[in-house]
Amino acid sequence: MTLNLPAMSPCDALVAVMVAVSAAGQGLGTAEMVAIERLVNHTPVFAAYDIDRVRAVSQTVLSIFEEEDGLDALFGLIRDALPESLYETAYVLACDVAAADGRADQIELRLLVELREELQIDRLHAAAIELAARARNRQL
Image 1 (cartoon, rainbow, N blue to C red):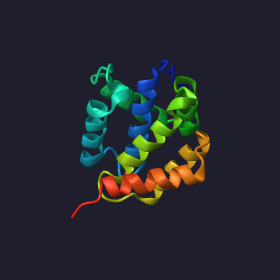
Image 2: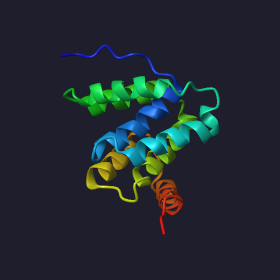
Image 3: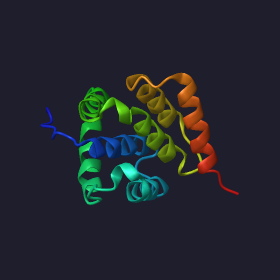
């Protein structure tokens, strides 16, 4: 089955990245979905974004993941929709979602590595982003 994938806006692509990280782990967990909603509601890049789009984008990502080579298809959509100036933003959001539940499993970490490579995020920048995400999401 081949999916007829809709074009994504830059904000849709950012949401897709967050959903992909959440779905890659233990599925769409509550802590991660709350983090996605919080990020969409409070991150300046989403100021004009319709939060009701999160559900549709989530369904698209889950459908893509059911396909063979789904991750490659998702990365293609993200690259097509995101301007290069938002690549680091996408990585920051992905790391925040991965850290939202206080742990990142191996599948999430592998997806972050692939995303970092796909978006050509410098390793030093990535390390700083990852450290900041861990610090922001640390619990007592």
